[in-house]
Image (cartoon, rainbow, N blue to C red; front, top):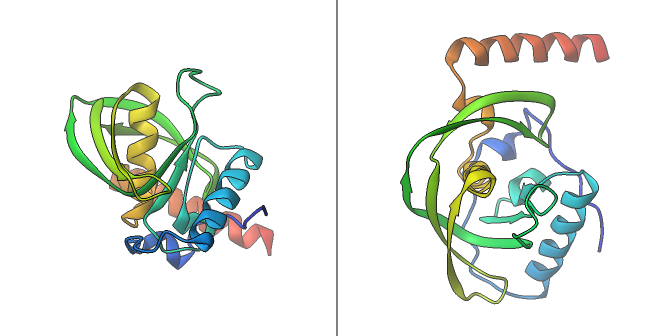
Length: 169
């Protein structure tokens, strides 16, 4: 296994809709294992393939550090089947280090996906798991958490980001 480079905003791969996975081979399994290792090392509770430069509809989630009843989840070609309620949650993102924002999400949802062997399964989620699922599926759709905040806050973020880039140079 290997640690992968986490792509940071404004990397173009983060704004593209990822391609569905159709081949379940050794390369996919290696990518999954490397993503899991990278997520834990970051540390984070989720990681989507575009965040490591792979435009594939693949994500890994492990919220066990926050909620022990949930094991590692591997999602291939996930889709939200049903969503309801609304909750606001302070989110961070490995692709936008040192930035958090309050984001409105569905409170409850059902997600359908494939596991690493290509078998279909569903997750009925609420709480932090529902938030993490929506966050990672957003990555697969080319959306970042800054795409979920108000235009004024987004402009403020972009100005602050540009200023930080100038001071780093």
